Image 1: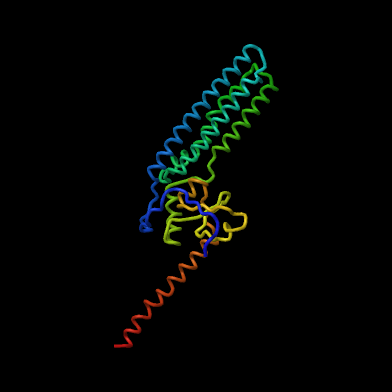
Image 2: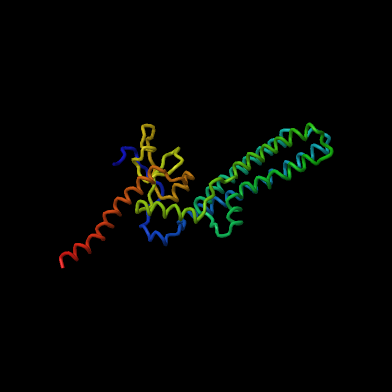
Length: 265
């Protein structure tokens, strides 16, 4: 069976299948280069967020020392700018980890690299919140307003930086081996809004009336482009059944041949 939907290839050509037990995921040089660029841009954005925080603190203290309300457009605007920069940096950082994932061998570094966006959210907002809440010259109402704004910004930045589906070399390797073991090649399919990748482009979950375009590529490409890590259960069962049907006749044949040979002697 096949599909009449538009099939769009994502990523480069698939490399020949290696020995399944020996395969270890290695990012391409192109992806390593992209990941490095994303990390550099993320670092610059996070640095800009820290600078925005410093200026927000200065504007806050300046207003307090001048006996003016610290709840002003400058302070609030800098908090918003801080949030935008942190959030954008976290998005780029998470993309870089999908292109060039860390290894799980060192658990501490693995978690730090995947959750660095959350760490940077605290770095970019926690000092400001402390300055606001501990300043004795500021009235309670102003503390509540600015503290709430900065706290909400920290929460949004933290959620944006949190990686619920942490990429790793081991995860890419294991799932690629699974796909190759089931189908003989590292090729999967997914849709624009899908949450799973599929082994067959005619799978009912992606070959419906609402689907106009199906994307195909490697398991790693599905991670990189859509952060899809779940293998479709229907496709997995179908592939396993086809694999068993192929293996069974071969097994029966190898058992029967010696018997036939003995009867002829």
